[in-house]
Image (cartoon, rainbow, N blue to C red; front, side, top):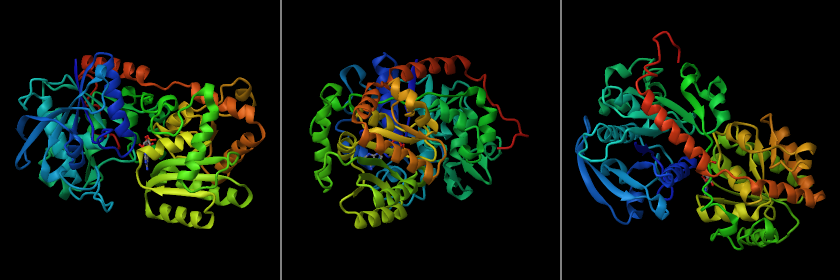
Length: 502
Ligand code: ADP
């Protein structure tokens, strides 16, 4: 079976969040199992600057889009020899050869032609999928990811000999909803303008293309797969997802321990492991000096690396710090980029507590490793979290996570209590109610254990460090699912009846 993995982000070429990591690591894990999987990505400017060699393998004409589009072929950089992945790049310079990031300009505003950019990306994938791109390798399965690829299953529904489709939801909060005016240039079929198709309150929803028309739907953790059937997590799509719940499941994302392993991490000052845990303190001192914080081995360092957006519970972190700093000597290091209001609040906190708070606004892969290695406690009070990666990275680095019990955080962290501490199964602190008091309570408990019971704290670190969330199990599950989608093609849809409310 040939699988084409369609994505808008791909580490190490272009990454905004977890989707970039998954798009690299899942195909690589499948290649190691001998699966014939390839990736397709838009040829963004920054990608072309980092791709060393490529060849143009096809020039295609995409219906309704002016000008030819080239399909380039290269390989995913940094792939191990037994996991080399072919990468196709959809090269449409008028749409992708720009400064800025995947979805927005350097100034942070969404590109106003995002509907056309990702619409043409989907249309180009469809040409490849139906063998109209003059490329010998034609896929049997298209694995689509999030709204930028949502039109693929919808457009393929018009083709009798289409490949099977799997659609993975990485974050349902982002749906790719566009006005009639913005999708005009795409020449979308009239059939899409029905609420049982892609119409969403007078607009077109790209993500509905994936949710309505794909053969199967996954999301990135078992708990999130249940949560998205509820209105508080589904952002208006709960009816549709309930209707498809027989074809929805959650597969936990994995961690690439070649990249995220303190024992051989070349990005940190002193690699360490359980048997030489004292070296973590060298990394702690390095973190303190890099961020201009007083060197103090005993002061607990709390940390957070995240997009500074509401979802990540940044407000809770700010409020908790305000409270704790009045009474306790702690340090906190935050790495992130995002909304101005959070940046301003964090800057304000730093100006009042320069010896305790350090922040770096921006995206920095190396600093992310330095922080994971040097910190003691990792803060992840996400309001919702489809999977989350940093809690898993943190465990491996012996940095105890404090998380809201939701989504993938609930699936990966075992809460500290007297039983789990005794049984040495605890790996972090979870809190159930998403409010300031619950989070603060969890932080205070963690600091108390850190200060008063160093041996128990060490056991807690070790339990996390021993956990293994590698991609092997999850990628095998995806592999079985590809076969299932292939066998069941055309049997599960169209599912929606016109009386359904979505
Ligand atoms: P999301 O995809 O919602 O942003 P995840 O936890 O799934 O959240 O993945 C986020 C990924 O992006 C992690 O690998 C995290 O380390 C990384 N990341 C987020 N912000 C930054 C940043 N400012 N600098 C470096 N890495 C970051």
